[in-house]
Image (cartoon, rainbow, N blue to C red; front, side, top):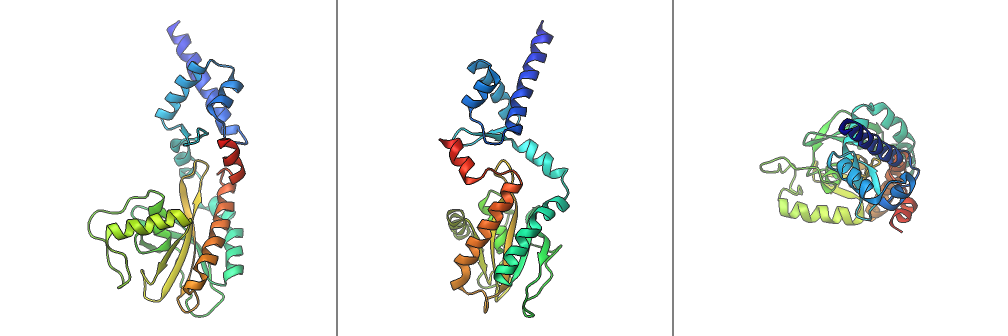
Length: 257
């Protein structure tokens, strides 16, 4: 009897997980209880187990999403080729709008690795960044990942230029601004005269799995262009995030209602 009860619990938990994975819109506890027909106490107990094992995540508004274990598995078994295939039209759109170098990057350890690039239409400032790894704290791409929870390495932060933010308190204030506006800037912080702007790309559970950036010389990317480029990157990165399974703004609002 005990073995039968255990099997039944596993089956019911699996059914709840499948419902969350296959739903077109984020589900709430009430949605899941209604669909499953199970008692509230049973759904609560099973969800607690799924959350404890990071198979399910619950947002602040109560909506349910695939947990970090499933997200990590999906991306560990999904080659970058698939991400790049989805990202290519967005990189091209950003390039067509700005004329500057456009990159997509991921985090590798305590560094950012750029995995694809569309070259600038200008002769000056063209550098092939693909395969290059750069620090987190003095790059726009790195600031995006730091703002989303990636950890800094221990020890002193390298000051690459006179404008590098090497103090942790000052860097945290910068990251607060990144979170508020949705995009990051590094102005002559990695190399003198090099400006970069970046925005996060999210997976189904909201994890920042990549970032898009525009970079070029400060003589072309002045402060008067920061906001326009930042908002462009946010739009394209958000569209790519939806293709990766992240809920649209409408879906998130519907889930919160």
